Image: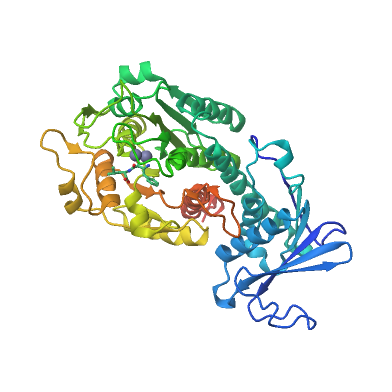
Length: 492
Ligand code: BES
Ligand code: ZN
Ligand code: ZN
């Protein structure tokens, strides 16, 4: 998949003779009578490495039996693979027999754990080895189902790693035009259609928000459209909208210098949208999916937009700019207006590294989840836990609408100190209107600044697993509610 080195994944009945072994251990289970309990008792994500002849065996703890599920298996598998890869493993067998129900999570974790970004390291500092082969040991009678699950896990992980690769690229490599170019290439590779609006076209069509935010940079903004047509191209699609600020300096309302480099990750919402479309196509989902990336670079400069400016978005609505650093909502407003008018989607899901306030509210691990729809709220909430893309509901409501009222435009782009993630969401809702909608503020989990057991530091690809699986779930649900062909055709 793109630049991500392909790792071969195979389901086998027994571990082959070469390579290292990974074995999962629920808390309290003794791995052998030779190993004292003090040394290893299966505590969550603890590990024990043994040497057996020419190979290594890594035990990894799953924690208490009652909480073992896909979330912990994904992490444990990732942590195990990551630590083996660090010590030179190239071939790994995972003993997965008891856990075949969650083989997708196991494979996904393993491939996320094996990921490294070393493109810009000098040859001498690059790892000399990397994972090439993953074997999943499963009883032969379960082979068929296991292969399908493994395939799903592999596909989701590859899409996630592709998004991490894009995210790791710096602002001088990935600027809006370059992102559009990558989107084009990927669309070709995955059989998606792709259309890009350049600044001239954005002007003709009235994308005042995207143009304003991008006006300070010599790298003009782009609206990138991707479409996976699904099995029924005539149906209203699900629309995915992503914030793709390739670098956010804050603009005239300049950010402080410390950690400003991290703002190359302000494109992660858009990158995730790209990855999800690739995954949807590989999965051959029946659902039609449209992706929109609002790409711009937010810089100060002689032609930059400024506090006080009034902007008109694609649908004619107006924004009073009070802070040029609250740019995400402005580009999203244009993208949402466009997708609503041109595609009449049955559902809009947007992903955006939108507010620092969301990190203050929820910390770094969970994304803010905003939706007026209770069913969607519950679906995302529980699915998020299951796939290690946790989300937590935050409110929309009149009190936030009140905070963003402007004296001279429809809204102003900041709503004061209180509830910053909520006022940003309330802002987006003005453009969404009555369309079914989920907004994910991924400012916290889009990247990590310290490595964890199963992920290296940098972009996480947050949202790819969650939304790909959400789309898959929608498709399966539609399948189940369809009257069965056999039954309806039979004469009584
Ligand atoms: N991209 C930032 C939000 C952000 C900050 C994400 C830190 C992840 C980590 C966004 O464009 C922004 O700057 N938002 C401002 C809004 C404020 C000016 C109302 C913020 O959160 O400070
Ligand atoms: Zn900003
Ligand atoms: Zn931003």
